[in-house]
Image 1: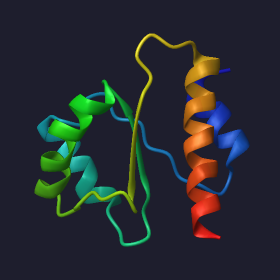
Image 2 (image 1 turned 90 degrees about the horizontal axis):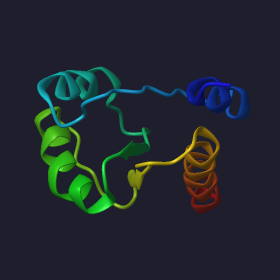
Image 3 (image 1 turned 60 degrees about the vertical axis):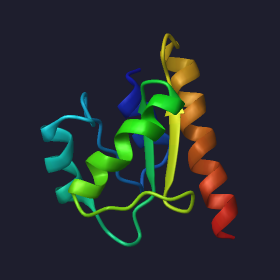
Length: 100
């Protein structure tokens, strides 16, 4: 089963948007479409440190300021679909636990 299908099945009430190049102009455009005060961003992209260096400016151009309260960068480099799913699922559950 594809990653997005597994996420939808596990979290049917959540919205997921996959974008291949968050740090590019099209990533900025995507941020403009999904931004909101109640949005929590999990960015499964390149390495976490590289994300911390590059992704915040992209989101800021879209009017979103990433903090530890609304953002969890995770790396999926070289992982199987199962392992990638588990990392995203864990990030979702960690956010849900912190909301309680």
